[in-house]
Amino acid sequence: MVRIKRWRRKRLTRFDTKDLVWDSTRGGYIDPEDLGRGPVWRYKPFRKQWHSKNYHSPYREYPHRRLRMPNIFYIIKKAFIPIIVLVLVYFFITNYNTIGTTVGNFIEEVNKPVSNQLIENAIFKYTNIERANAGVAQLAWDEQLAQIAKEHSVDMATNNFFSHVNLRGEDPTARAMRHGYPVSTSLGGGWTSVGIGENIGKMPVGDVVGIGTVSKDADSIAKALVNSWMQSTGHRENILNPQYSVIGVGVAYDGTYYIATQDFR
View 1 (cartoon, helix red, strand yellow):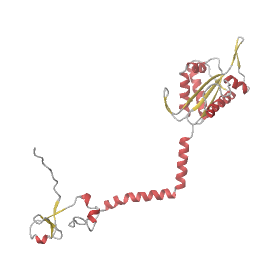
View 2: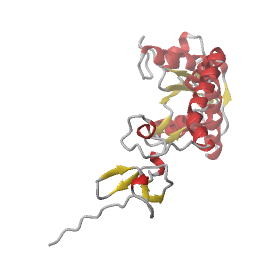
View 3: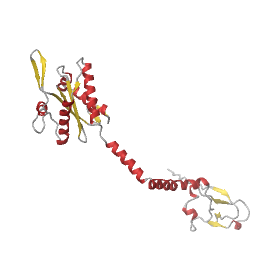
View 4: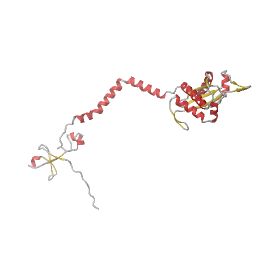
C-alpha cells in the first residue's frame, strides 16, 4: 500500500526588487538582482503571523518578511482589555465603600430569615381555609394562646428538641396552666372538655420530600406546614375538630427549620 503524504503549499505573491527572493538552485534567499529579469516570487506570511514577536524581532528567522503596520481595528482589539481593566479598577477604587456596603446588604438580605409573624398569620389563614372546606366553623385568634405556642416553638429551636413535651416534662395543657390559661371548655349538656390540643411541625425551604418546593416566603412556608399536617390523621383531626373555637400559633427559626406550634381550645 502506497502512503501519500500531503503537504501545504506556501502562499506566494509577486515581489518588488527591494525584497530578497528564493533561489532553488542555491537553496537560499538571495538578492533579486542576481537573478536578472523574469518573474520572481517571495514568501508571504499568513495573517496571524503578521504581528507575531518573531516577525518584529531583529533576529527573526526570515529576514525577507516586511513589517506590516497594524490597522486601527488591531490597535482597538489589543487596547480593549487593558482599558476595560483600568476602568474597572478605577471604579472599584473610587466606589469601594459603596460597593462593600451594597454587597454586605445584599448578602444580609439573602440570608435574612422570613418574618415569623407573617408565617403565623398565614398558618392561621390556611387553617381556617381547611376548616371552611370541611364545613367547620372558623377559629378565632387567641393572643394568650399564641404566646404559649410561641414560647414552645422558641424552646424547641433553642434547646434542639422536637416534642409536645418540653425538657421540664410539661405537655401542652401543663404549659397552658403554668401561664394561667383556662384549659376547661364547656361543651353543653353537662359535658366539659379539659386540655389543649396541639400540632407542631418544622419546615425548611427548598425541595422537601412529600411536599415539593418551598419558597423562601411566609405564604409558601405556612402552606407547606398546613399541608403536611393535613396529610397526618391526628393533626388533621385537631385542625378540623368542631369542638375547638380558638387558636394560637407561634413560629421560631433555628437557622435551618421554621418550627411552628398550633395550640387549640
